[in-house]
Amino acid sequence: MANGSRQAAWEFFGAELKRRREDAGITQVELGARVFVSGGYIGQFEQAIRKPQLDVAQRIDETLQTDGIFERLWRKLIKEQPYTEYFAHAAELERLATGICEFAPTVVPGLLQTREYARAVFLGSNPLATDEYIEELVRGRMDRTQLLKDATRPVYWAVLHEAALRIPVGAPRTMACQLDHIAELMRARKVLVQVLPFAAGAHPAMGKMMWLMEFEDAPPTVYTEGVFSGSLLDDPAVVKRTRASYDLLRATALSGEASLVLIESAAEDYRRCASTT
Image (spheres, one colour):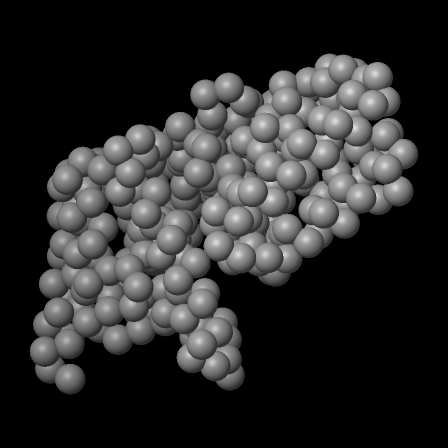
């Protein structure tokens, strides 16, 4: 499903939600209270600005007694997303974010990936997949990277563990190009990137990835990911603790200037390796 038709389908979801809510004589605030979100969120669902999570769609069905229509619509629309089901909602929120902070322990974040690096990542996860399937995944990843090219792009801040620079993903030339790409974005002042060096030792996010998103008219959200699973968390206490951990990471990481030097040095190491193979 193309992006335009997918958006039109979500607009239908929102229009149907508004119609059913008004037929039931319930305000946005009242419906929000019954399904455990704010009235403002209900308004954004109805305008197709934000997409509800599955449990919210299910509670809407229960509240409005709509015989599961919103759950079925949700499942249909999410199935047609270019992303895995557990990541689809996070990808939608990503487009609305005014600020994104990310910590990557072992892999370059998706928004910073080049096409060849992304292909190597997906091949590593799907060694028996067809070329067509891998290309579909790569295309979805590259669509996401357009976000950083927009004039209204969010403020993007990434902390990369040095492991993400040193683990060879694909050929040496692929890694050199990937690190060059990050350096170019840094020099163009489109992103803020710091490297957490091996020498830093223990840190607040050992074995964890962090992804915080901030919005103009909604509370901040944290996304965490495990094995074939992902969770969006907007509990204020959780967000506050995650933000504190991220601040500690930034304080421990190298400065932006020192990080750029390390990234460019690692890229040159891969280039020398590529020239000898």
